[in-house]
Image (cartoon, rainbow over all chains, first blue to last red; front, side, top):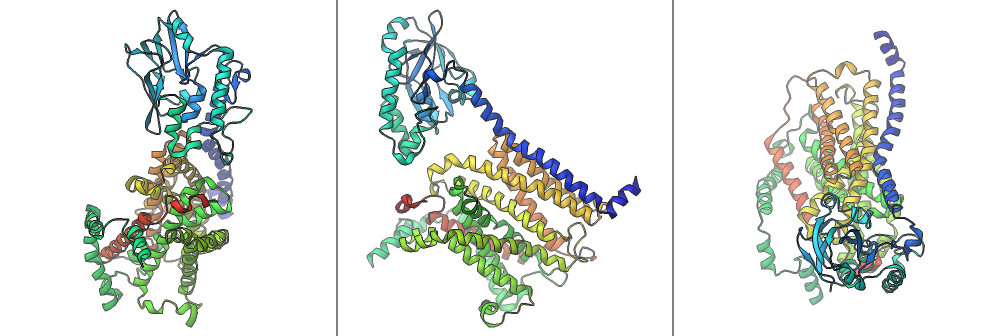
Length: 236
Length: 403
């Protein structure tokens, strides 16, 4: 064995072996370093298509699944069981505010009132208020969001739900919510209002086909993003 | 006249009354800095009055001593930030990294400038500084190369940084001109950097018998160049970490949102360079057939600690940080990598040179104080510039002229 090692040393064979193994290691290393990113992209794509019938639900670049009710402050309601409903941010609001860093929601037992502030998400370290879409008592807070608030951005209508509420007045509240064709028209109008704010230099913020990008408020209004958010989420 | 007064008040005294400005200078950091300078500057003056030997511990056995070991051999790779970032942004078109371009160029410029200061203190007779350019070339001397490289590269770095200076003094024309030649200056700068980063290593090709075999290698110039790349990348991470933490008011708020992503990008680049460097170091050992020296005391173990502890481990810290998006880990890796480069350069310049001599001393208190004083001045200058010039932020008057 010693003589083989000597032979490799004298003939420089060992240097070639190291050089070739470097190439192998480097390919692995490269894949390893890039791996993290590829996984994220894959997850994002997978979660995007989780909403059934994406394309017909896409209004001006924003997802608007049919089976949900929408408040004009861009929160959604979905009946879960009996008089219990789930509440969350719609795709427009999560894209408007951009990356969500945390949530600030009332504890279980708190009463929410339709059209009044009661929930908020943290963006750029600033709490962004949201209007409650229904009257009712908070009975559960999405535990997963404490750890990974990014779920709201990734899956606003699924895993990104904020709270569950017992809403005995849901039937009455429904008159203040959009659904079906009305919801589409409403979102289209909101999108139009947003478009008037875009400068051509902004590039692809909202595409005519395909989903809109995230963090629109900041791209449009820069430092004054919060004012734009307040205006569109109607919490001025 | 009034205009100049206003400009000085706004841009030199940060819009404060002179009294108020002076009052605000009294901070714990400044008091410590002043203490160091009160001791250090007289020592530098003594060096010019009584000669180098009065304060510097160098000798024929230790030609560079800690003074140039730190000032030149560590200072130059740590100032590699400028050419790395300039080539990323201007040559490879990675415009995302623009928020880090000026800080990197400034770090490079200040780093080189103070490497020259160290050389000036070491050489003495500063009025002879232009000799190699105009009076007597002396191409047989290594200093001929040093003088020309450093003079040219300092000029290039100044040109690269000058848009910030011209914005500061509010001259639109000159700024436009400087922006116009940025790409040319960058290309020239990369050529010069490649040459002199490796030239520092090439210096030791003259001394194969003096340098410990584990560090001596015909690949030394390559090692010096490649390690300067990840040293530069790591220094950019460290610089931004410190400025964003200690001088957040000087940073464009927008930059806070992208800095984590950019740091991850720099970390990824550094990890690729470091894994390559690690294998090259192993090939160096194989090339010299130095395997038997690896487990000897103290140099073998020191080599292993340097290559595994301060190259491979930070390399993996970088790559894990990139994979998990852990920016904190990346920042720790940056500090470890820079420590590794410092260790490598000090070893080559001091510890592993003439390693067979029986009795050697490395630490001399006066020399250490002079070094400390020059580093302190360097930090003060850097802070002075960042506080005034648009380095980490766009100048309000020139915001729309980007691109």
